[in-house]
Every structure is written in structure tokens, then in C-alpha cells.
Length: 428
Ligand SMILES: Nc1ncnc2c1ncn2[C@@H]1O[C@H](COP(=O)(O)OP(=O)(O)O)[C@@H](O)[C@H]1O
Ligand SMILES: [Mg+2]
Image (tube, helix red, strand yellow):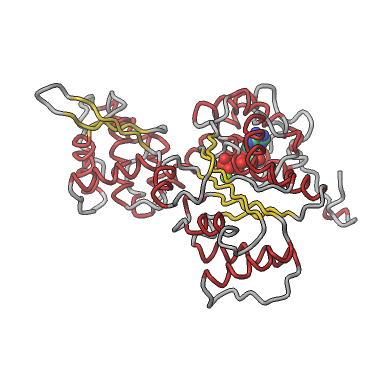
């Protein structure tokens, strides 16, 4: 073990649970031999950008897939390998990475590209941080490319967060428009498949591109991904079956490798906090609950109070009722009662319907159109994608809503009153 105490025993601490905790950090990029189950995807990305290793123009590519399916990891991995191979062939090549959830405007994205290029090359000119427009940043980019590079790969991660797609056009037309002689390949990444439809409307044919789709991991892949990071823990700390359980839970929920790793880490922290010497299946279960509540809270944090109340209404109907799905009207009735409880003026049923649609888009609920028979017409049925318990917890974290009944109170209430239409206003 490395000496992190600076040679002074006073600061020497032995972590009983973690050995190399950094292996479980969100931003950690695993070595090549720790990447699991993405051989085909690696090959496919390599086929699009690989031309740069021979000094030829790369293709543009869009990668779609849910979060935690390895899109960012595989893009960076392949792009840096292509760069290294190109450099070994005496081709001046670079990889630029932009996180568009941070740099979410064209100005921010181009500024970051220009600054990164400057840092890498020792470009002399001053690039102002503010007070200049997108065009000036492009000028710097083209100039640096011309001076220093034969080709670059630009990874635009979470590109759906970008306010417009002009940057795609600028980058793909740069050579044609004689802005630069360098070849530019773009890897665009989106967690939202819906982005694909809007992309076609936003860009023209100059951004010719291939599309790749990354699928969620199954339990055995998640298991292997975690096994490869087992040395994050001290020997014999992970109890038999913990990784299997963690993989099974994550595969059932979303197939998200990031979440699976987070749960494993959280379980370790839980064990450490409670003075346990081992990480047990129990710790995994508890960590999974915490992670799920965090996920829901993250998803709903930007939501209006009425969206939260709508979710709470659906959750409470599920808890006190005997069905998993409810009509808009049924949720609305419960919602009006709940508004009374927290002294909030209810919005209209149509307004509530729009809130539910937004939550369906975020992936908190699923809504399905059902034909109600010839005389009834069709209507929407809504279900929760997660355990209603987590919704109740997440919603009650909003300080203006903490007086709502807890999950246990709702459960008690539902066994008391068999009537599915329990009047929630009696909970004060
Ligand atoms: N195939 C894999 N092998 C090993 N680790 C992986 C794999 N896929 C994802 N991970 C890890 O899971 C986390 C999420 O992956 P990431 O590439 O950020 O997903 P995405 O960009 O699709 O949301 C990262 O910490 C990454 O290192
Ligand atoms: Mg990503």
C-alpha cells in the first residue's frame, strides 16, 4: 500500500473496506482489459473514425443509448487509440472532448474547443473568455488546426443538451468551405433516442453520419464489469453473492453500468459507516434503495410542485389501491385531495395531464393508451416505473411537501380502509 500519510504515522489510516476506491469513481476510465462486452461497439466506432490512422478522412457518427451503456467510455477509448495509432504513423492528430451538458451553447462549446486546442499546442494568440462571439472562437480553431494538425476527432457528449446544432454543420463543412485543411471527425453522443428525429430537422446533408445504438447491459455483463473492479475492495471484504446480487438488481432496473458501480460503492461506504468488516447482500439492498431514491429525486428535482403532487397522487393510489395503473381522471381526483392537504391550489385536469406527459418523457412513469371499448372511447393509463415507496420519499424531500403522509402511513391507511377511494384529506 502506498504511503498517503506523508511518512507521519499520525496520519496513517487503514481503510478496512476499500483498497483502491478510485476504481469506483464515476469519472474513472478503466484500462482496456477491464472493458467488458462491448467488442462489437468498439469495432463499429473504430470503423468510422479509423481512417485517420491512415491519413484519410474519418466518418461522422452518432451514438444513441440509455445512460450507463458505455457510450462515453467507448468513444474516448476508441478515439484515443486511433489518435495514438495515427501519431505512430507520423500523422498529427488530436482528440477533443466536449461535455455538452456543461458547455450547452454553441459559444461555450466552441470556446472550450479553442481553449483545449491552445493548451495542447502552445498557440500564442490570446483567446478571450468572454465578450466575443462564436465566430471568433471558430477562427482560432481553424487557425490552430491548420498550424498543427492533420486530423482531429471531436467528441460531443450529451449533444442533445446543446441549444442548437450549428456546430455540427460548421465542423463537417470546414474543409469544403476552405476554413481548414485538417480532417475533422465528429462523434456525437445522445442518451435520448428522441434526439434522432429532431436531429434530421436540424441539420442538412452536409453532416453525413452513421448511427450506432448501444443497448443496456445484461446481468452477466454487469457482473463482469464489477468483477473487474473487485480490487477496489480489500481482499475478502465482499461477501459471496454480493456482486451477483448487485448485477441482478441493476439489470432488472435499467442495465446501467454506472448505477451498478455506484451501488457497489455505496454498499461499501454503508458497511464502513456502520463498522462492518464485510460488505453483505443486505448492504447492497440498502444501497440500491438509496441509489433509486437519488435517481428519482434527480429526475424530479427540476419538476414543478404540481408534477411532484401528480406523482405522489399516482404513487399513493398504487399503495392504497389494488392496481398498478390508473387513469388520468383517477389520478386527478386524488391529486385534488392532496392539494388540499398541502394548501395548494390545484391546476386543471388538462394541466395535470401535461405534467404526467412530461414525467413520462423523463422516464419516471409510463403512459399507455387503452381502448375503453366502443362506447367509452380511449383513455390513458399511467404506471410508475419505480417502486411507489421511492416516489413518496423523493417527493417528501421537497420542504414544502414534507407534511404529506409517509409511505408507512399510506400502507397503514390502506389496510384500515378497504375502500380504494380513501379520502386522503383525513390525514392531517
Ligand atoms: N463495458 C464496460 N466495461 C467496463 N466498465 C464500463 C463499461 N461500460 C461502462 N462502464 C463504466 O460505467 C460507467 C458509465 O459508463 P459511460 O461510458 O459513462 O456510460 P454512458 O456514457 O453511456 O452514460 C463508467 O464509469 C464506465 O467506466
Ligand atoms: Mg455518457
